[in-house]
Length: 175
Image 1 (cartoon, one colour):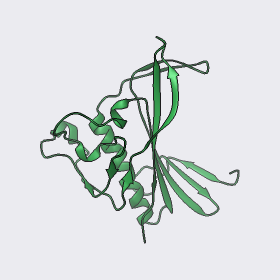
Image 2 (image 1 turned 135 degrees about the vertical axis):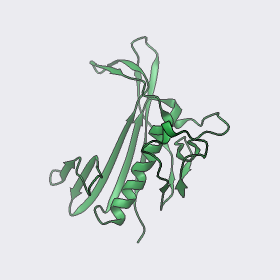
Image 3 (image 1 turned 90 degrees about the vertical axis):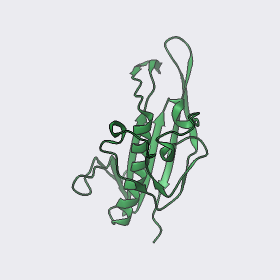
């Protein structure tokens, strides 16, 4: 799309940052990106990668869900016509369901087959350290099914295989 205009990190409103805005044929697409990594050291097509283990799955899940909520808000406010939220990860902890009986981030889980809908919020027993600057519930207008797609399998330095997957949600707000 050579005629498309791409703006990186525009600020639709005070205190709101967007990763990317794509404008093509008058259509405005707001795009949010997350890259959630587990430890990986290896080469891919001759390029060396040394990714850290980010951890803090609960906080990262909240942030990924907040991206969807923010995209819905930008559309409702007229800043964009549509939105796309993309999460790329090599950490199975995001696409596999957890085993904990009562996790504090149950509403924000992104595992395969889950549907994000309604008001997402922390469990009552979530600690202040986790919820700091992430207290607000996220009332979603739409429903978003989590369907992880294989992106690429790569080899670590020790020869073991690592799977990268992505989660893609098209975001729209019904009139």
